Length: 125
Picture 1 (cartoon, rainbow, N blue to C red):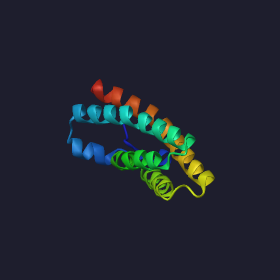
Picture 2 (cartoon, one colour):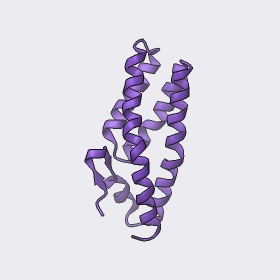
Picture 3 (tube, helix red, strand yellow):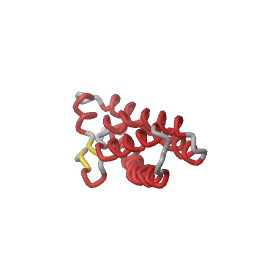
Picture 4 (cartoon, helix red, strand yellow):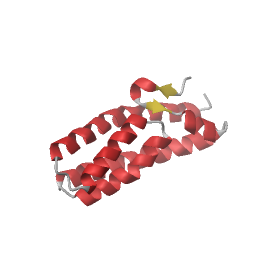
């Protein structure tokens, strides 16, 4: 099974490389991503709704390296834009929201893909 999905901004090559054949490492890493990412997305959503730009920037900053680790460079670059805009006080709130929605629309289906990959790896496939 391939672990590169360029059409979905998902490339697990780095994860597989550092796992060095350890399905347990892959499963644990995906578990952590699946736990943290929806929480961070929700934190950013709530922060944007409350116009809490400090919290939005902080949560985006925490999400950014996870996206890189899981080979989502487009999402990583876009969430960095969200982070920077939030740090600057979101002078163009519509653009910030648009960028965040773009990231969320890519990440959400990738979470489902990762659930399947995790299950396959946990089963030794």
